[in-house]
Image (cartoon, rainbow, N blue to C red; front, side, top):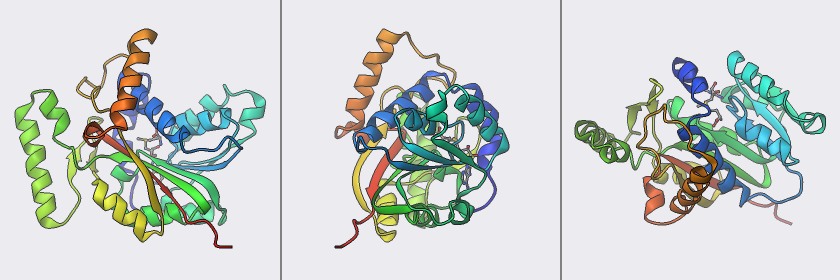
Length: 272
Ligand SMILES: C[S@@+](CC[C@H](N)C(=O)[O-])C[C@H]1O[C@@H](n2cnc3c(N)ncnc32)[C@H](O)[C@@H]1O
């Protein structure tokens, strides 16, 4: 599935993990996901796990997690953070050197209750094959959680910032992409040329892979106009901000304006 284009922005990404935008993103992903997980320990596959924010959080919650990450530097950060887990939680995490293209071999055909793929699809040339490869790793009734750039709301961030030429350029790109029957392309704020998915094309790809969309949410609906470097506010303000973002992200019409979209889809249960 091509080179790892994320690497061009890796330094920026790693330097800003504690900033407002990533904190909101990770917290929203965790809250939205938790509503769909049962309390019993689940087997989880996190593809493109990166620094492991969600993988390690799920291990702490008692789930058994396999994290797949192709880049050695990201794996090093993951391993460093995993060292802070207590022994019992750490024993439930394994980290595998592989990418989406090598997923089947890397997981030796195992099926998982939950498969995550967060912040990865935008770095791939297309989504359909990736979604099929992720769906193939689900156990019957298993849940696929995808977080990617929302191709339906590309112009919203520059418009909210009153950067009218940038908003105009994004609207033009969306129109061209629709006319040419392709996904919208953009340069993201960590400096990588990337690709966005529309909700309709995600639905199509998930259904083509035999999954049923259970729910979708917006992420960073109203807190995305800040610069990449904006610091996280104190606990009181952060707590209200997160509550507002969580509610906006699950309510029409606001959720459609999230910079990221979080889609949860299920594999069919085995027929008796
Ligand atoms: C923006 S980071 C996201 C990390 C984490 N999933 C998160 O949401 O915080 C993107 C990650 O995807 C990984 N990646 C890029 N291309 C990939 C591919 N083809 N297969 C699997 N992972 C990939 C990168 O190495 C990087 O760690």
